[in-house]
Image (cartoon, rainbow, N blue to C red):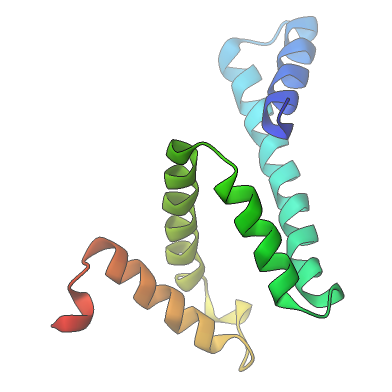
Amino acid sequence: MSIVTEEYFKAKKLGEKLGLSNEDIRAEANNAVRHRISELTKELVDAFNSTGSGDIVVDGILDGITHSHRYLQSEFWAGMICLMERYSQLPDHYFDPRNELYKTITKRMGRVAHDPDYDNK
């Protein structure tokens, strides 16, 4: 069972016990999932630092993606594009000279995703 499914079942069970509405249960489940994904992302980001080689992490990510259903792979990449767009729109206080380049790159990638001919104009 996926982490997301587990969080939804936990929230549903607790919500039913507390007599929450389906809407409130869904909101609580979404918050729990968001928190869990945030924690997993922090671990992934830390893995790039602690392994000493980004290749190890990239290979692991690719292995996970390529062993997922193809439809889910497309959902993953759509989510990554959305993530890049949102990252590029964060306020400047999230960036310093070490990662300013990546703000520019992610902004450009978001534009290309919406207009594949963007670089040719």
